[in-house]
Length: 88
Image (cartoon, rainbow, N blue to C red):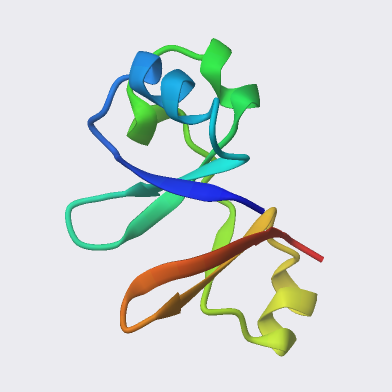
């Protein structure tokens, strides 16, 4: 999936613009990945951090994926996101 990064405090208007060029947005909190934002979330009220999907697993572990069945998995390299996929 094509993705971009957005801050938790950013507006949904900004998210809407970025989602024109990406499938999903990875929402960053102050020091870690908070969640994932898709066009489905744009109808909610608040900022990106308030409305994002929190059901994510960062740096997937096959045992945890099968146990938790997250909505999205995010793979990082040196702390930076390199890919995002729907869960199992």
